[in-house]
Amino acid sequence: MDKPLKLKRNPDVSWRTIEGQAVLIFNREGEVQVLNEIGTFVWEHAEEALEDIAGNIAETYEVTFDEALADARTFVAEMLASGALLKDAD
Image 1 (cartoon, rainbow, N blue to C red):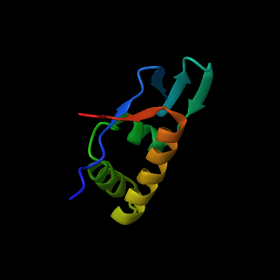
Image 2: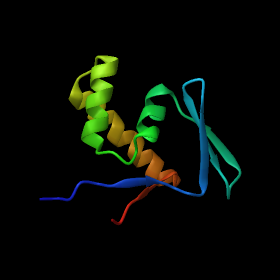
Image 3: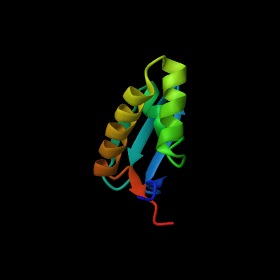
Image 4: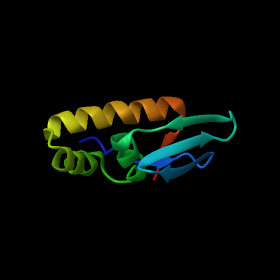
């Protein structure tokens, strides 16, 4: 059985939530990224199990669990590719 993916926010990315949207600042590159409401939710809960995050999204936004999980996985993959999220080795 595969171990669940554990994530952590990159300490080189500063962030703050403003009016429901997370604003990420990639300190080394000087780039800024603004996340939508659901992206912000995933970002704020990134250290939790992806299935738990998807369950909360499904309940809050009235989508199926499978849709929420697929979207959360896509978002996490994008955040890993950008370096905003890192795989936690723990």
